[in-house]
Length: 283
Image (cartoon, rainbow, N blue to C red; front, side):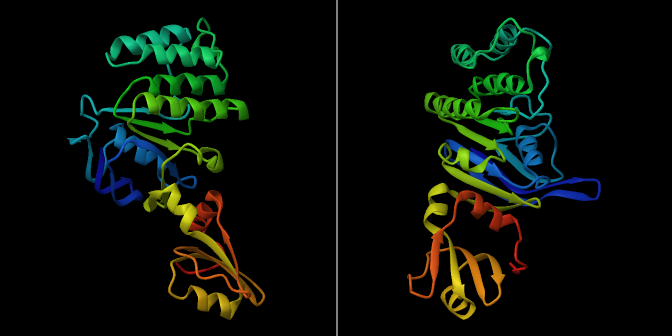
């Protein structure tokens, strides 16, 4: 379980995380979305205990997390993670030796699946293969919380599909909290259970993917008709072209009428409306 209470992180005069309160209680695969600079990496590093926060409290499984916490119960791999320049097989073996709960069989199986050359040294791998090695080590750790920061960086389309399969298999074998930060939104939608959206250091959204599928809609038509239909709904964005407008809602949609076009939003379009601040609509 992860608990954040009024968490703020500042770098000098810049506030990167702003008074975040968040509770993640259930095992599951969670997707963390946000624009560049929104605070995703800072949030993950703080939960992992890689850096101290300025204000607030972070707890994992009831234990307060700081840089001095000996075992945070968190396995975290950031993008461009570095390892000793050793053969891949030896890196996996070392990881198992320092962690009694490490699933070496799973790591070996994934190494074979992704055709990683166990004799090749880490620095000689491509960017995608380096990322894959880091991700395998992280997932095989069997920590109660796994944090993956842009894990598909450098992957081609086939590797990304294999990665999502590996993520699902790892979770099914060892249910726990897995948070994945990524920019490739639609691909991961089939894998995740819940979605976290961070924008300008604040949590804008935390709910199930199913809630997006049942409540995120666009409503288009003449301005007066759309405004009347949405006046009591949670409007998250708006586009205007001449006398026609489209409003984007996260709410139960109004009844379909001849004067309105109502369509469900894709996950990507929902994300854009939540953080894109398009169309000059004041939220």
